[in-house]
Image 1 (cartoon, rainbow, N blue to C red):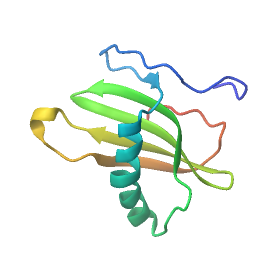
Image 2 (image 1 turned 30 degrees about the vertical axis):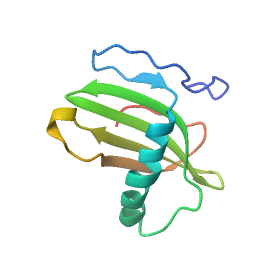
Image 3 (image 1 turned 45 degrees about the horizontal axis):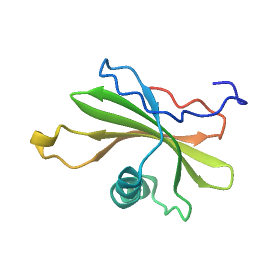
Amino acid sequence: MDPDQAPCTQLENIDDGRLRCGVPHDESLKLLRDKVKPHLEAKEGKTFDVFTAVEFKTQVVAGTNYFIKVHVGNDEFMHLRVFRSLPHENQPLSLHSYQSSKTKHDELAFF
């Protein structure tokens, strides 16, 4: 992504498996803070005083993958891949994977 280009800001609702841009809504931000942050902190072995989603993409699969760029303080960012299963599966939100040592201008892409 061009550093001068604005991050994704509009959510497209097409179910073809491609990444779609979006802005996280209040419920998603609450889930990120309440459910995902503790898992990431446990994996990293540290706590994050700053944990702010700044960019958000989704991918509809057999559930939904959320790709989230998170500001974690100073000039540090992380890319998270969070999976939400289909409602009938009744599974908790899960931190699938993450990438650390990211910058504000790193493109949020599939990983």
